[in-house]
Length: 246
View: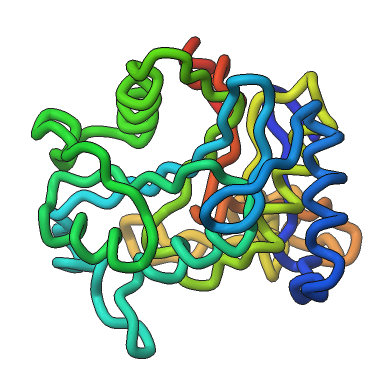
């Protein structure tokens, strides 16, 4: 853990817990976050006094590099169906919101069990809008309802087709147990030390990225990690105050 965030390493993720243990585990997760477990129309979810735990899946319709990627078929289902299923199976969320500007994506998302209570405005759906304003917009929309307060929000990307409920539960547990941190997200370790990376200069020549480590043994080098871009758990205050992840 460092800075304002913590991370969960997907390389250590195990298979989902047996069904018979899930109620016990939901209650343990909720206890750590000072929340309570309540029944919902989709099973169990965690909730504090008038405080909600929500998932926000940002899925705009104007993908450029891969048109329609958010609902493109993946093994017989649209891509967005998989993170929706992971969020539902985790039973962590009072609501699973898809933020989109596309009526087609909205229809597909609702058919797989997500809520689409609004269509995202055009200024939050162009090529240059980041995820943070989209998440803030979703919180504003939900908290405009009297008496609604969000405790935790999880931004889940719509193409995270390999995401599992266990990843979400483990990360939530880590954040709930780390009051000094604002975020928790998934990372993977680089398969080869980045200190031994090479680059190609303008003349086509290979040069070491870090010359000081060109002769270092790989087992002696510090491991580094990269953000896999699946989800970001956040405390409400961090989103509201615009606290950066790093």
